[in-house]
Image 1: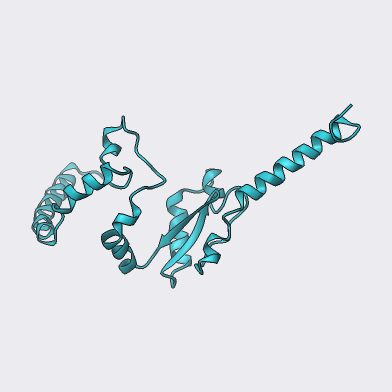
Image 2 (image 1 turned 90 degrees about the horizontal axis):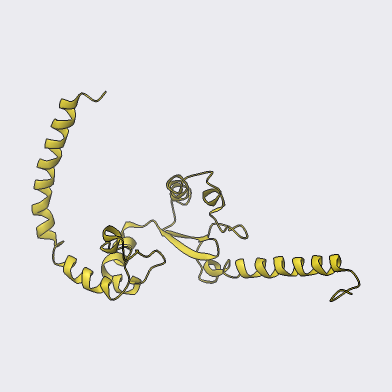
Length: 173
C-alpha cells in the first residue's frame, strides 16, 4: 500500500511535483528584491537568475557584463541575480568612488572569499573578510594617497616605455 494513494507511482509523482514546487519557490524568493527597492532590474529566470548562459558556459562573464553595461547605459545602476542572490551593477563613476572610498566600511564581508592557503588571494583586499580586511585596508590607505600616486605615475610611464621598447625589439608580429 502506498503513502498517499493506492499506487506508489502516483505518490512518487506527487512528491516529485511538491519537491520541484518547493525548489521553485525557494529559488525565486528574492526575485522581487530590486523591485521592492525601486531599482531597475534585469528580468531573472527561475533557477538561474540572470546567469543561465554563463552557468551553461555559452558566454563568458566579461561579454555578458559588457552587454548589460551598454544596454542599461542611461541608468546609474541596475540590479541582477546570480542564481537567487541579488547583485548590483554600478555604472556611475561618482557613485563607484563614493562606495569604494567613503562607504568602504559597509562592504567589508563579501560573497567571494579567499582560501587562506592561497597566499596570493589571501592578501587581496577584494577577497578577504574581517578582521584581516580592516588591517590590510589601514595599511594600504596610507600608501595610495594622491601625492604618492602622482609620484608613481612618472615611474610607471618610464617602465611602460621600457616595456614598449623591449616588445618592439622582440619583433612579435
